[in-house]
Length: 257
Image 1 (tube, rainbow, N blue to C red):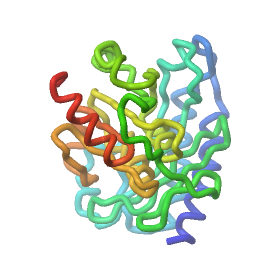
Image 2 (cartoon, rainbow, N blue to C red; image 1 turned 30 degrees about the vertical axis):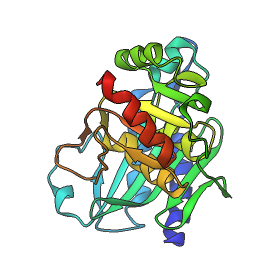
Image 3 (cartoon, rainbow, N blue to C red; image 1 turned 180 degrees about the vertical axis):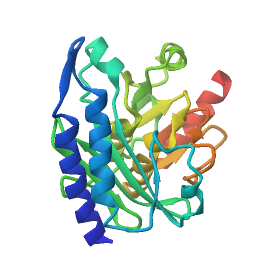
Image 4 (spheres, rainbow, N blue to C red; image 1 turned 45 degrees about the vertical axis):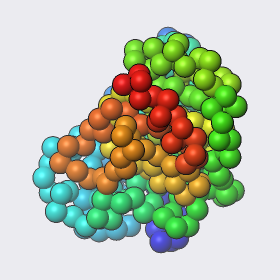
């Protein structure tokens, strides 16, 4: 698997250059064009296919194709763009590329790459999580009053920010689920809370990163997820952080459901 991971890293780095190669100005930042997104996705497909021939393929372009459901191994891939962050001038760097390899629905390899900052977050199942070659871990903070939480910038999420502002030490609005999960895995955030539906390609690689960094990712009701499902929408949002903190926050969120 290490050889596969090295090949994936190289593929994602090349696609990152493609993704950022055709920018257009939008609001406070620079956002890749639609064609650059499609070109990056094509680049990834051409690079990843020889690494593991016969894999299924799941992106926003192929979500409704049935072939992937019959594959033991599937690539779940996206150039993820948090365009609202650019429009609002928030400092979070976007876009990122998110790549996961799943086997029988379970992620076994994940990579989240931020080409703007040259950050490469990777994880192997039972092999740990790393940022640019350095091992990373979720924080060990277990008291919500001591935790810094990033909250997804949906309307519902902003309502949670208001109602839970006294629960956490600090609340920071956030976009781009793939990147936020990588930040949790790296210990740069104690917690990520998203209360809106997400797609599998937004979450899958980050799910593995968080777990291999010693953390937990759960959905409302304490559910976990297997991927490459017929319905690729992850309903109801998610909570990610260390296991104790996630459990406590899920309890806090029950009255807000």
